Length: 102
Image (cartoon, rainbow, N blue to C red; front, top):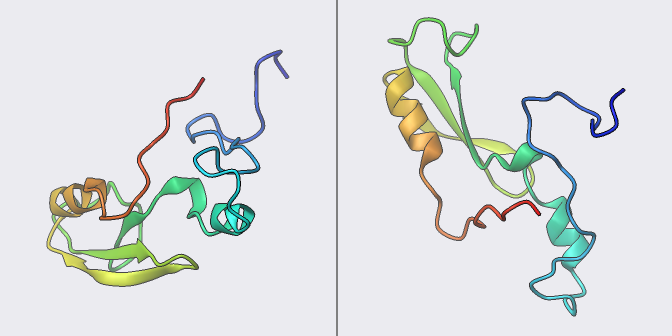
């Protein structure tokens, strides 16, 4: 293992975050809010309706899912991969902005 390597797949963002939200250190629920974040900070995702890899058959419909603070819930469908990617990349109201890495 290299000097600067971290555990986990290299194609995923680091999950290293402060224990308490620096925006409001007096917040007694800071640890709770931290646990309510979605895996890998992905608030919206899409999946092929009939299974398989998401890059295969880009013209087939996709199921859209949105994080509700506990799990991903169905949010609709998209007619193709391009539309699903556009929806997944939109910012949701109230979604935290990505913070720059030091």
